[in-house]
Length: 296
Image (cartoon, rainbow, N blue to C red; front, side, top):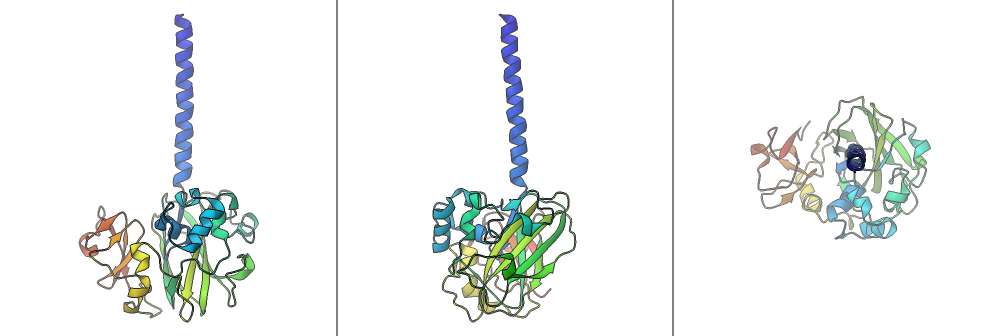
């Protein structure tokens, strides 16, 4: 009887140990993700709208296509074995889902009403990488003149704007990119290739150049909904990294990844905040990250 009890106890310990190891492995995998939060990628915008309270027609259509789990997994648009062979692992028509239409197929919908950020000249793209990793490069592409948003996005629709040099692991990397001349609605496609693993991450950012229809370019969250109203106060100078970034407001609520302009500098929120003046709360353990002068 004692031997039977010992065997059952030992078996139970082994099972608990296996579950614990599996859980830790899953946690490690889940944390190793990221996306562009400013300007908002498609997945980040839908996540910010709220998986159960989506307000934009495009995000609602994405939900109808692939369900709500994609929004909870907003930082998981990836290919674990990319190794730089992005055109091989991400087929045409599946760029915005990162070649994973079974999970993120809603992101691939060819529509002309995805929430878009007004841009002009240069633009700073900021990632939130929930697990930082050494990076081989970030690549930023943009759709070519004549791009038709009603057609599936393919690699031939893109032209490369910039590839960054290798970078150390960072949770909030940002890159200022000089945008080529465009008109109307376009897509910026970004690739993050790790150097410590073949894993790569992908993001689609919808942008609107001046002269296009901006009727669908406002978001439901406080940061991006004020872009169009505050962009007139942001310089369109090509050397200004705050183009399209709203001015900080003491009454607005900001969440992780939101960016604001204050005292001619750009700040990014680490977590939920309201009323915390950026210049008074930008230390190592404070809510705001000072991303530097707008005139960098």
